[in-house]
Length: 84
View 1 (cartoon, rainbow, N blue to C red):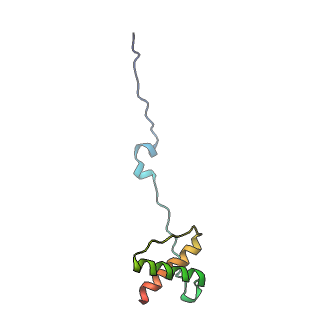
View 2: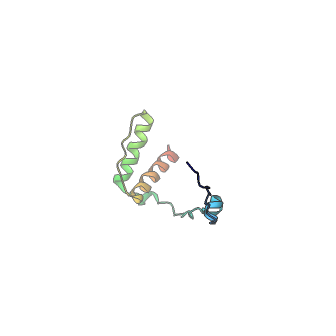
View 3: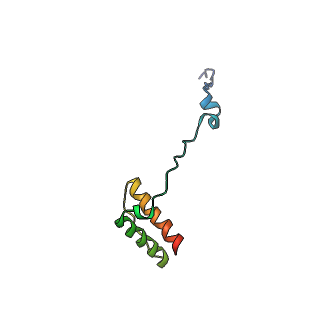
């Protein structure tokens, strides 16, 4: 049984050689705060429900929602924390 000579093939691409230099972070998009009156009332009620369940140490089921709805809920939680 004969073995042939083995050669290792490496890539010379910069992304393979130095992964830290090739990766770049996405720019963060800073958005304005939602005004208190601009929060949707149903999402505001849901945010208060979440805050109440957290206070009572109960489980919370958060349904799937789009990004803007989630922003409204998070803004409600921020306001609830700031004013209580």
